[in-house]
Length: 112
Length: 119
Image (cartoon, rainbow over all chains, first blue to last red; front, side):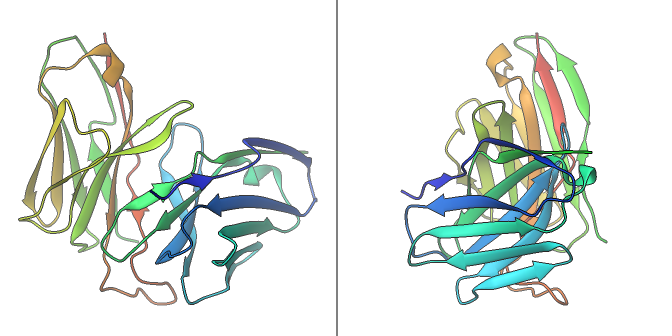
């Protein structure tokens, strides 16, 4: 059974810092991996999706990498801003016909 | 951008009442999902549907039922609500056959959520 872990559960950084959020998964035979952002009490916003054949995806200040063999993905946020404060969730899909399996997220606070 | 909408956005009800949460999407996606989110437990899958004739149980389907009325509509029902069903409920969609410009296949999109309180 696929399990997704995100460590740390919470992270606080000063504004302007570059930071890395971690995601690990137990079964490396994945179809794709998706990173989401969630603001308190709100829905999830898709940030980046990496197919199993890809090593990374970039969108603005965000870069997500995937290392299937080690069961790990990282989300890199450059030049963090207070508006980046949110919970970031990682989810993996084992095949094209299975649902996403979610981690519990990392709650990020960027302090001005 | 096309939307995933949920109604109601907030609902307070009493134990034993029947409740229906509705989800509509204009993305043209075949696949739809219902999740609940609880503090400390993360997102848990209740039911999912890969097309109008397909319904699948998730990890916590007991106490819930669903109806896929059309490609664009997926409803979640609580036949007799109980207090431990108090949670934030999310609908989501995905489509394995569609690559939206610049983005990849089988990307999943979420609705804004329904906050349900059962007294």
